[in-house]
Length: 171
Image 1: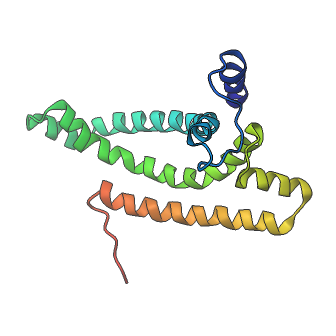
Image 2: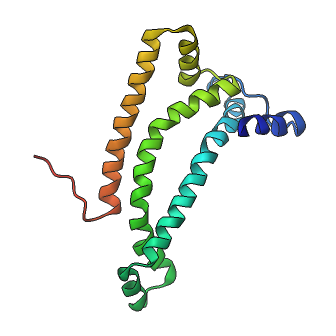
Image 3: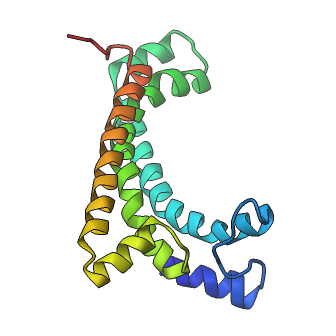
């Protein structure tokens, strides 16, 4: 719905952006950027709303913890207390959600590429499903599984940075 509204407002009414089309970056970087700006906005908007709500809820929960009271009683500035002591523990659930969303972007790209008429893995998957082209469907599924694994590995690595109690051990 957002994709169609953006197309109507930015392309038809205001004529600020061209209608999205497949342009190679090497041909014209400016037109390439303008063509992909709306799809990027559409894909990012839903995720940004989710992450903002989750971060807010997690920070509110973290602010009620005993260690936050201790940090404030030490005389640390509110900004430092928020950044070091409240935000880091609140980001661990966000990192988990990001790991799964990393793979889900492929599914979102399928719809976005179809709506905007852009060539990509998502549009290829949609066309393959319509044609019942099994090898391509399996390849896209394997690609999505690969991104799930990569997302989980990235989450594990980010956990070690966010929470000092988490360490990577090798058997």
